[in-house]
Length: 386
Image (cartoon, rainbow, N blue to C red; front, side, top):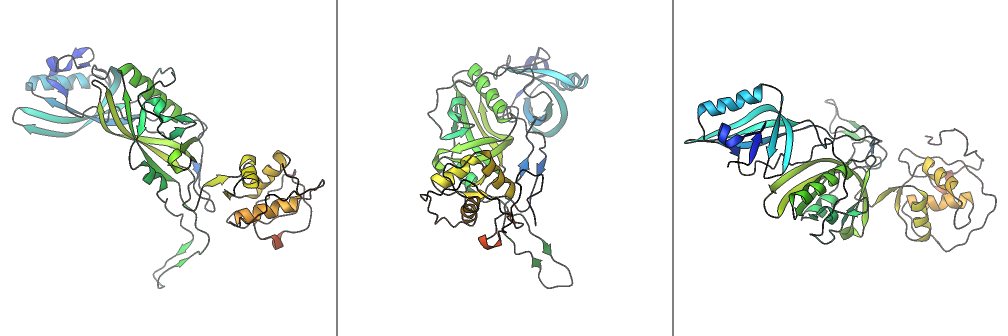
């Protein structure tokens, strides 16, 4: 037990009679959570809009389980040392890692004859302190089939474990429409509008291996650094026909950490899928998405008037068509009517800009509700009309 843990430079076992119990490192090496993210939650749309312009890791609190078989005077000395100031230096030799930790509380104590087992809650207030980024390097696992921002998790020495796909495909909770339920009435009155879905937490079950502690910490730090860069992450899953989902990191859980021999780090990344629908891959309208609809196969696209205008103005269409014909195609796509003749070569040199009414569900109204009047798409008018 000697030489495995130093507190402020003193051997914990020979000085205080304590050592880290089996499994005591697990919560210590869990990634810190992300600080709260501001969001917009539009009821008529699936999921949320998350402000990830400057995401920050939070401090983390965790428990280290210790065993103790020294004298009362030694353990009393240990707590006196932890009480003389807030922060203390903990050097975990087996892990090859040093932390500045502060004591928060004691959460349990078991006494078995002369052996005591107790848990102390600590706080780590300095996530990625003084960290300088290094690219991940690993050749332990073949491709995992899971890419985050086009980087396969195997490059971090990570294999993805069972039950991950089930978590990805689980249906998120439904956003509640207007509900009236009073004591003066039987049952309830519920708004029978379109169903939309909330964001959801998805668990990516992972195993990270490494040939050395140096390699492990390099990949460990690179993963959380890349997960918490500004803006949403995109996770691509080969098993689901390379489906792409927008998400952001929320927190992690650790099942087992063994720093000996070939390092074993079994953990779960909890990601927030910001927009997921069980009825299909919901994709914000962009020019690339529209050309996929036009040239390849229809997608279930979240349609708004602003998106439609942006698509029209961003680039000229590959296939020439009138504005009305363009809208009609879009309406059919939004209404899941995919019987569209994509081979028809429309031609019009002077497209018109008819006024299109959008209903509260952001799905375009049928063709007969499109008015004939021209509008200026370059004006500041708010086209998201009732």
